Length: 110
Length: 113
Image 1 (cartoon, rainbow over the protein chains, first blue to last red):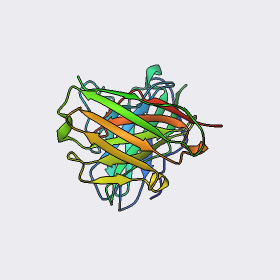
Image 2 (cartoon, each protein chain N blue to C red; image 1 turned 180 degrees about the vertical axis):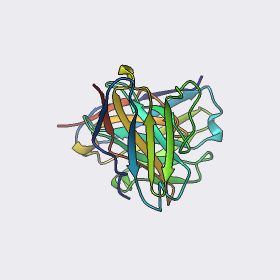
Image 3 (cartoon, each protein chain N blue to C red; image 1 turned 180 degrees about the horizontal axis):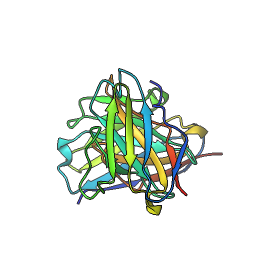
Image 4 (cartoon, rainbow over the protein chains, first blue to last red; image 1 turned 135 degrees about the vertical axis):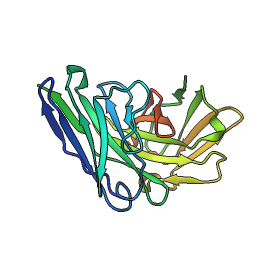
């Protein structure tokens, strides 16, 4: 199983919106509703931001939203804030009971 | 509040073994799948293994099959990862996960002579 494909980096100015893509196959992203997004700040453990493609855990800002089209999932952050600067990872359940992660996308708030 | 506390990391020589533990609280441990994920220094996340609620089903990423064994003790609300034949590339922070949702703070494993 190969890792999911994410852009290495994205950037945006405060207040703007950005979208991070996560591309897989029919056997993972496109085949199951179990796509999650995590935020990781330096030196910290990852934190769940979106689960099951588009659901937000309690306490996560509604500025974060998730979606999926075919084999590509997306994380959109609206109203960018300085504190959103972090690395974002997608993950997906895959056939055979495995889980896959994307390579991570570094978000820079300009 | 769900809490996951990993332990057992440290410095080990190539070819050596280490057993990681994850003590859990705040949820009914015996009712959920659990996973281990690692992150090598400066690198991304790598899912390693998961285990079914009763321990009857286990899945592993290809890179650790035959070397790592995931297990659990539902009476102790604890998850384990037995790591054998360790290599330099196994150097990483190892995280315990509840439902792929909640992460522990991790324990660091360094494989070096």
